[in-house]
Amino acid sequence: MKEIGRFRFGPVTLRSSPARDACFRVVLRDAEMHEYESTDERARRELVHRHMSNEITSLDIAAQCLADYPDAPWELRLELARQCWDESRHVAALARRLREMGGAKGEFPISTFEWNVTCAVDDLPGRLATQNRTFEAGAMDVVGGLVPALRQAQDPETADVIEAILADEIQHVRFANRWIRRFVEEDRRVLLKIVAAVRFLAEANAALQSEEGEANAVGRVAADPSLRVPAVNIADRRLAEFTDDEIQEILRQAGFRSLVSEPTAP
Amino acid sequence: MSLTVGERAHRIATFRFVEVRLMEIVAAWIPTTPEMEVKVMLGRHVWDFAQHADALGKRTFELRERLHHSRPPSDAYLRFLEDVRALEATTERLSALYEVVLPGLAGRYAAYLKEADPILDAPSIVIVERILADTPRQRAEAEAVRRELALAAALPGDLARREGSLELLAALEARA
Image (cartoon, rainbow over all chains, first blue to last red; front, side, top):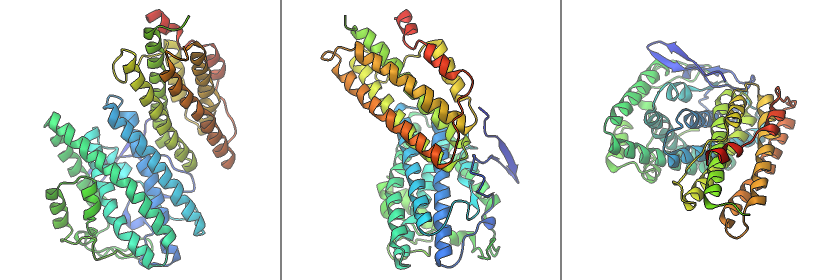
């Protein structure tokens, strides 16, 4: 079986994209996506399509970790296998919702950024730190704000799907937090791998994200990157076993905005 | 005559090895399979195989082996699984796994049930029966996704003939 290769983008070497249906157009940069400013039907279809695509990518990543690390502890492999099922259910639920909204797969461009970065990391603790502890935890912040926003936009059906997905994601972040701590307790050098993975993610993000004032493919203008950090979903981060110190640091990065009072626009 | 504790442990550990390998094969296929609907189905089946392996691994501990003890099958069966893993086309992957590997494995589990003592080895029987209950569902899901995507059956090479002629447990007896 052919291995998925790597490619160079600016200063970083990323993993080439996983296989996708021919109907999908895979893009690399935020600016090529069709994320809309408004909350109309097309914008909400794009949101569901984007989340569906991200869930496919999460499935690909969890599966690749299972395939790449046969010597990982069995209990961790079991968590990754369960994550595969969870992510596949998320894809199915979002695909069903997309069809209900009159949409179809391939309707909008997609990105596999999380795979391109995570699967370029060569060690399992680094991948868990990148995908589960950073991307999925970040998605908990974004999605936590989306649920009330979608209800406000009179779309309770999509809100229900997103809310159910969020509950599953907490466990994916929690098991990564637990295993990263265990790996570090067993071998302090693992910390260096995690630092390297997080630094690599920051470099990739810097290379690929839209610059302030840059318009995407449908004219949405990007804000200052520091202002794009979503409000922190403190309650779910606690459930996912982030420590108080870690939550405080994440809050600081988010300008001390938490989800208690401000739903984000869908 | 019923199987000894050691013979049961060896068989269960071999089945565990195969279930772990199936989990790994399907996991490796997911990122390299383009069709979203197929990925979704394989994602569920990864979890099925993992649960099978987990239950079998707990049983090995009850049979005087290590927790989650695995024992490789015969070299020929291992090569057969490697050839399945190497398949590239979705149609071939689906045909090989759901039309050849799983029915063949179900036959091997059924043979174990015939050998097993219904009282002394009842815990193994319960696990194997639960695994066997998953197989028709998995195959039906594969058939449904194949119909939905209009994917033709495409059995590669001589996999079916090879599966039928392979001994999973004979090598086990030789090593026991």
